[in-house]
Image (cartoon, rainbow, N blue to C red; front, side, top):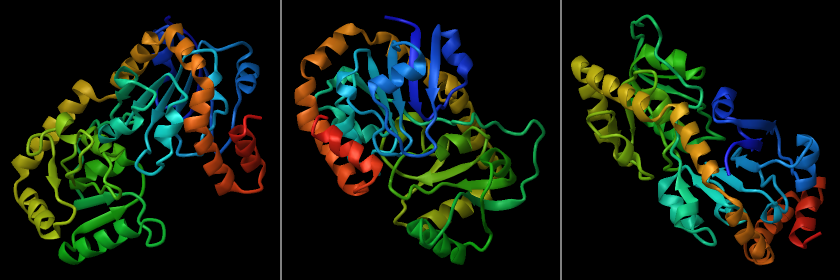
Length: 331
């Protein structure tokens, strides 16, 4: 099976031309807030039955009800499995799971086998690029992102301690492509130990990046000391030493920035991930659908019912909560 109509629900991370170039038509279902869709909803929106249904994680409650019974190939791109422990269960209702965090691949291998749980690393979603003209750095050290003692308490405490050690730390919010090139060193923080998109977004702007030493395949994608510099989040003294050494060594900063930028350009741009996505969809066939439909009742009872009950309880007596309760009991 190849090309055809994709009902694409959730986040849309690629240029539409990537799908067209591969012969796919896309009906996009944007999600600005939690919502649910049945097969009938999808067919009505598309005007016909789609050839594929793809859900790309928006960190919302599960949007597809009855997905285990959809009569076409289905795929899920799971990004926030470090936040939402229900995602691996929900994924069992699909034919293919694309998983952002490599260390979580085993959690998704339940009904889905090894070939249908695929590592799909992060990438610079906005396709950040360095400025056309070189920018003179304004800041020694920059962290760009939200810092709030209520919503990001660990990040707030970490940066407060680092600022006490390094007063030249700058904290800003805004477009990464505008901010990162204005710093000699860009700092990344992984508050939950995930391999986050900021790694790729910083390298994509030809920045010298210092990022936490996490798992999830970071060392398979980039080499410490060649493409970027890594630190132990529990060792503030070590982090300060790494930053000070980089600030004192401009040739090394430039070498890291150039090598990281080249690696992103070679393997981790949106077009690389889009090609992997459409190759994976192309490989799905009706055999996977038949296999799923044959065990749909079991998949619902063992996996999806638990997810729906969780959200029914979390949302309570609300329209969405009642939809999840009905879905859990098979109505």
